[in-house]
Length: 331
Image (cartoon, rainbow, N blue to C red; front, side, top):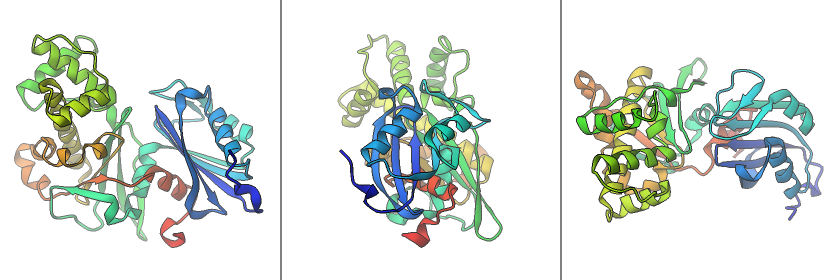
């Protein structure tokens, strides 16, 4: 059903946050924040990104859209995009022409999320440990969902920030104790390279569960990531409980590495679709211990706060900033 946004002569800009499972869309009226007509579509229901955008715009009454910024879970290395965790493949320039846009910006979804960090309010963040954020210091960003996103944000002149566009989710995952080493060894039987994303993601929960099940000599129940999470949170299933704890431990270890690498004394920020849903459990999980467990640099990491992001659509905020919108001034 049309939402009636074209009842005026306003011009709109399209924002999108495209992951391996869902694509979130919104419109900016005359380039002003906040967005409107937010909608989430399942990517599997559309053969191409263009089809998904055209469907969304039709639901909005086919407004006049002149520009778009799309945050996507994929590296941006040129005109051709081939999604890592989905079948969509497309040319940025051909997509721009198909949609009749004068400008189309594509950026990595975690680059977009990093750009949004300074604009997030305190009530959109929940602190996990640490007590000494250094104003003006770099930020580190990590988040697990369909994949594992990683980025960072560095301060530059005139109160501006420079985001990192990288693929840190695919670094080699290491163990900090024998049980983790055993799980990694089980995974190496199937995968020659066990990346951080291989175990710190939705699919990663399943991989950890299967490894623990085999190590314990049990029979797998073929549980989905959501089933593993719910049973782990309830504490009614010992293997799922260990899986969830191990997931948090691996995340903490990789997050600590990232924070050290970037010198991110401005804080570690945690996004993605999984951790924000863990609630209080995450605060008492092995995450913080593994985050700080860096030998001689325990004391360096101990005061650095970690923040779980609870903002509704922060990557859309970053996409808006990529188009030159200043949300704090327009809100």
